[in-house]
View (cartoon, rainbow, N blue to C red):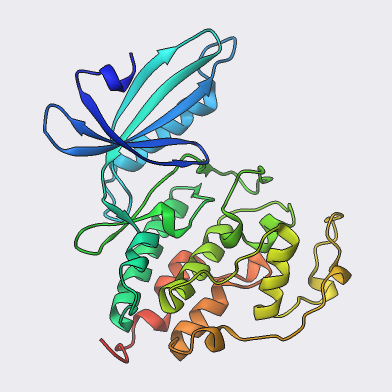
Length: 302
């Protein structure tokens, strides 16, 4: 049966559609609480539900069992309609009214240094927890960061999250273009540093209230990145990439991040630049970022 006819959940409205499914706001009939239902359509194999899907669900339950304050809680998993070719499943999460994109829009005058520090710390706490559990989120963006009524962050939308063994090749649907790391744009193997790049972009957005790199294609996105961060040397360019060449880019009118957003303090700038390193092996880790001096000094303003 579908959740629309379920005795447990009553559909209220559609919240949105992501890369891996449609999300609805619903009501738990037993408790009266609002929940978020993520509808996922699963192609069936000859042996039924593919093993990777079962692993994903097991992974979500494993994360939930640790009850991390910066990870959205999985409340239930429901089976919907099934045909010979596909199965509909519903992942039931706690409902949080707004995402970070909406939260930013609701603060047109911006945030204090202390607010930015607290939001950034909670994002990194969630990312560090995922990476410590051998999970790469792969789609971190303001729309996938939920903000509670009292201003706390919860990472959401793990439909694209994967456990990892070393490095993986990226699929075409992974990570919104504006928050993609260079290795993603170049089609290279990737690991946890792709999430750190995304967090760096989000951290700048908390200061400037607008996305940092708004490219229209992979090449245009790289051009916008190099205009701000500088073009890597030819020696730094990955040899195995054959689609986009190093000499395809000319950097004209270079600007610095602290020119784009002059309210970025010196320690925040240092942290952001350590997150936005072109070479993923030189990018700071989530744990390293949490120990950065940005989080240890007194705020310049509150």
